[in-house]
Image (tube, rainbow, N blue to C red; front, top):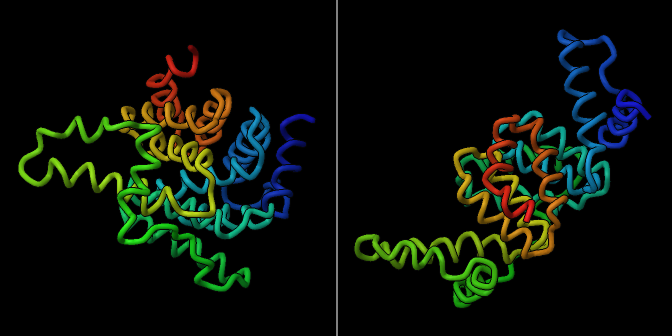
Length: 251
């Protein structure tokens, strides 16, 4: 099939309709967008529709493009992605983009859930308690990242030398990464995309590319994830992410 046929097929699968023909105020722009994203990018590389839509939800959450986020939450449901998987994809953005933006994305997501008859709140994904929160977070963090952050910030004044690395362990790795609903491989690959979409976080992109490789993603899957994110985050952020991790993706 050519990219026009691909676009029609993929658009129907995701949204249950047909791509733009000549309707609307900007049909030319929409044809460019739809044929590129759904006719070309969506058919490039090995990742399936489930992972591609979770990547899209991640980037739209980071960028706070909430109308498009609603459309793709609906697409996730259309292709059978469980609400808990969608929710966990949005939730885990919080340490990287902040709680207010994540709350905005949660509100948009929940509108779609409610419209589709999904009762809220959905089932709990928590696996830690106040007493084991640090230990469980460290158990996920240390095998992949070691004590790098703890060792790097010993220069911080007073209690911050202990608190800052602990906050990373307890918030990122315990409060979010230990949750059920997404496996470690998926979470790490989405984290790579999330950091790439943020821009200016190339040090962290590089670190999490290494983490994605350690948790089972192939080099091709990492590149595919970043390329799929490109129409939503822009070409410069794709190149920044690829360039900063080039040695790990080629060696």
